[in-house]
Amino acid sequence: MTIAVFGATGMVGGRVAGEARARGHRVLALSRKPPLSDDPDMTPVAVDAGDPDAVREALTGSGADAVVLTVRTFPADREFLVGATRAVLDTAARLGVRVLVVGGAGALRSPGDRELLVAENPAYVPDEYRAVARAGVAQLHLCQAHPAADWVYLSPPAVLEPGTRTGRYRRGTDTLLIGADGRSWISAEDLAVAVLDELERPGPDRHVTVVRENPRSA
Ligand SMILES: NC(=O)c1ccc[n+]([C@@H]2O[C@H](COP(=O)([O-])OP(=O)(O)OC[C@H]3O[C@@H](n4cnc5c(N)ncnc54)[C@H](OP(=O)(O)O)[C@@H]3O)[C@@H](O)[C@H]2O)c1
Image (cartoon, rainbow, N blue to C red; front, top):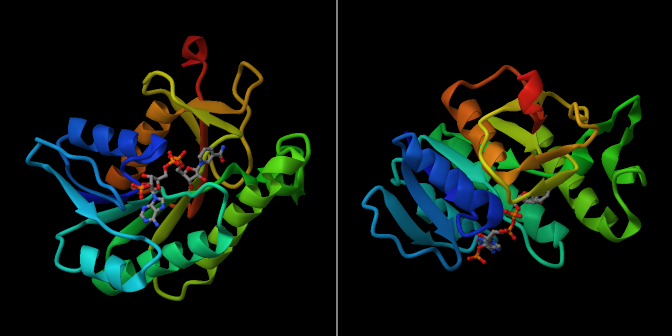
């Protein structure tokens, strides 16, 4: 496949690009300041995901078979996130290309209380992260309301951080998962494994999540 990765300079996007290359896929590495690369199958593309014309130009004729969206801003900018997601979905729908959105844990339901979104649950989201969590919820709603796009929204567990690649994770759908160690956690490396697994073998669910699998129970 040729996989277009928006946010390829980021924590998640960089690992998705690396995992894709390790599996032999070609990568279009998109961000405002794309990485230099001497890998002929990793093509840097400078694009502002907040500019719908630029998104359309970057994807049209690119040969992309799939798009992965992993952009974020500091501080969280809900308008940007929703606008960039809409721009990517619009173009991908026109091109007939599937989009995997790496979104937020806040869009998941709470374990034990399906009516309570993680974004509104102080057990998982402290007040200072509520705005970013709600931006992820808005991003999921945008996907759900899109009339034509083929998308899947991957919510990370509560904690996502750089770590090691084990290749093992447990997959769920719209409810936050807790690992065997009691933590809702995964490394960005293993999240990238889950992203590529989903692209290579699309599952039936539009909202999915993953958690680190305890190596002893795998
Ligand atoms: N537990 C959780 O729910 C959790 C935890 C962490 C992350 N996440 C989610 O995972 C996703 C990726 O996060 P991350 O930590 O990898 O982010 P990150 O490391 O901050 O990377 C953000 C990426 O977005 C790109 N970007 C920002 N503005 C852009 C623009 N206008 N146009 C194009 N590219 C732009 C940046 O590249 P340039 O600056 O070069 O443009 C960078 O590559 C986000 O959706 C985030 O919310 C969720």
